[in-house]
Image (spheres, one colour):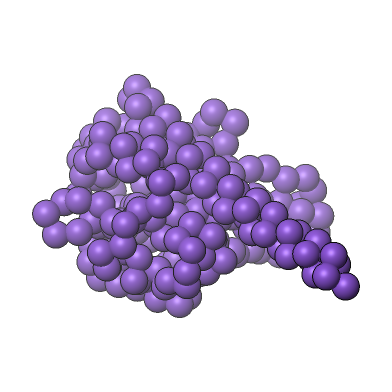
Length: 220
């Protein structure tokens, strides 16, 4: 019996370690996605918009597409600015949403959202946030500056972009929901924390967030 208990304990510990490693890998992938998008010549997120944003949400490898019922699902991270301009620790999110339609096949898309004001940030940190319903949203402009913004983009609380198969463009994610990914937060921080506690509090970033911290500082 003791041997069985020991094996079960070892299995649980291994599963927990694997989950933590997965969360760290997503953090590193999020950093790579942000760096590649922001450094793309003439085709990235406008630098002046990024520097004004209250929060950034990065979802590497958002999955979309299925047979008959189309859907979206992915895991990513939120970081928000503190007073003085420094960035918070990353808080994990799940992105879900979908539409009914005849779709066959699937794709993976990197998604970046900028939350442009504190009002949008406060809504984003709730237990459930729906893009377009809980805050105004628009497809973001592409380029080095935001001079090509439309009136809708200028007044949106959230701007969103996607990259799939090397093509980068502003997209509308209206109807997609963002929820806290409590399991990933626990894997990263070793205890239960809400996204609001992580983003608004004085929480030390996990070691695996170093690459993302560097990328955020680079483009801020």
